Length: 259
Image (tube, rainbow, N blue to C red; front, side, top):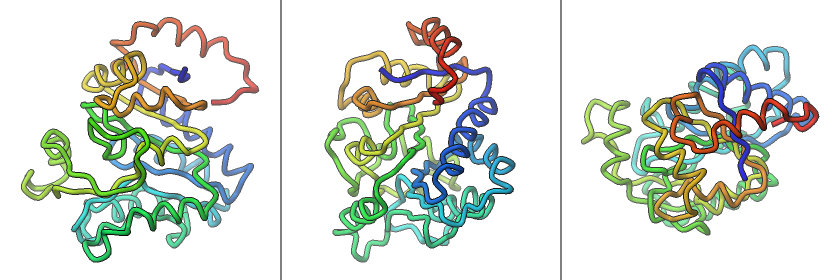
């Protein structure tokens, strides 16, 4: 069962997760992080800045969840650009050690295998940050994705393209395809940290955490992982049947356990 932590705000969630990441890096300077993009993880990255200001982060390694296929890496909304802007530069990570799937159409046939090999060579991901889509997707693993899937090219649903259109001038500019870590790849990380904020995510959160494990809700795959921390604000937790128990369990958790 995932540990569910309900906090008062996205900022409080960011601070909680940032503390855990800072602790990880302090104990292992070459830690391997899994990075998500979008608006959800931003409070984590913002909270990390003061926590890592006096820490040598040059040895930290990281792998992004996904990238659009066919987008220019220099495009401001490519995930290469987003990760550089929101994570690498503010936190002082070494750019060459922060990896993003290769979305170029040249060599796309083996880009997934190449990314899997790079993750394996790094020793696997220590802590993977995740968001959740309104349809229950994680990464770009849309409903119907195999729980055994590895990094591969996927066709985005119209719903996901519509949700992401806010980052582009119009939905017509949102790429049709992506390359994403698979559910099997994500589940191989040693610690999963899933964040969700706002009423719009409440239904997907409840389905993922308390519903059946189903390919129709890709995020339900986290129920299969031995170390999952889910951090929610009150709105995102509003449809959870066991919310009171989650609060009770966290309030009485031994301090030595950490997240």
